[in-house]
Image 1 (cartoon, rainbow, N blue to C red):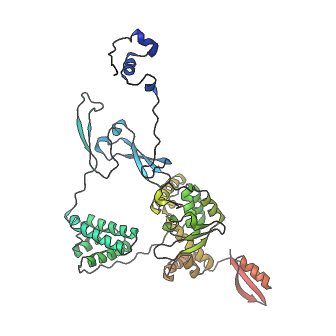
Image 2: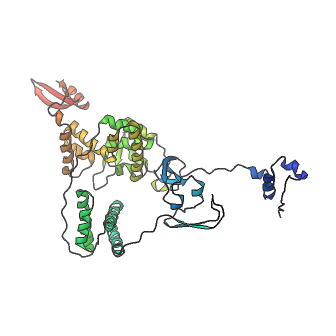
Image 3: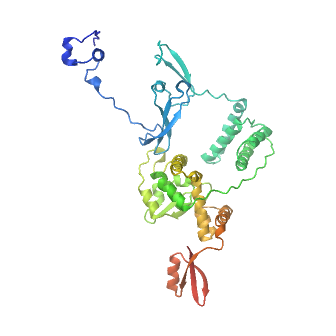
Length: 442
């Protein structure tokens, strides 16, 4: 049993040989400690900061934010982001904030008792209730959500994708937030009409509501909304290359594949290491949204960028995949793009999204080949009607160059010369005085 002695004034002479010239307070601390004086001086080993979602130690600081809790309001909170999958988490920096332990659960109410309050004259027990108040569901929500869950289960059993089911849930949640009574068609249409959504989005929500009212056997007259055809921003190839060069390794490789293939971001995110043919420099793309799967060529630059990526994916749910999920890649791309736009003072970079690479690829290939069927195969469209949008977009982009296309022209008199020119990308154009003319766009 360890004996604790009270020390007043100087330390006893018998302890000088062991404790040396320690101060009285330090002597008391060492003598009262169950460990030896040398054990108590061991340095505290700081645990490395890891991502709470995937356990990765590759995290970086992502600025500060204000605390949502009333007791630590105004205290700085360090934000971190996982470099592997883009997960974001926070850490309190102040001692006051660290006294409050917020468990990593879905509970929205935190009650903590502090036995010692800092900067107070008298220590007293203070009960602090911090955090956001629980959302009190409205009458419409209590009545609608059970039926919504039944509908989502039926939609899932009918083979709809998880992303489609998530869109259904978001649409119902927004309508309920706007005060719609989903069992009253007129109330639902009024809430949808007052919404700030685009008309094209309202048209999609109307299709979801048609399934909802049919599921509940409610008769209604659907509203009419037309699609809004906005001209997307198409950057130059130089702007795209400069942006890719400024991105991180994994995000830059992701964008390079988007640029060369014109695929959707979800298709690139689902690539695994077996999807790439290293010898022939080709990639097998598994289509989404009902499109056609395809095999597309890759440049030596893209192959080299993919080769440099780490092969060990830390996320067990993404084992064998080259990249993280599309949403995580999109978040990482947005944060890096915003930082690059501020550093280069180029706000136009914020107009570039993952789907912008698909628009750019389609319009440039349509302008280069003038072959919509080739563009249709490249994009995986099942209907030429979808490709016609890019034909119209290409004509608007290159309207000032109409009739001013420049070509490189070659002449072939023999079969060997004609074959060689076609292998170099030249196309047969006409025959003049017995000579066959081939041309290629500059």
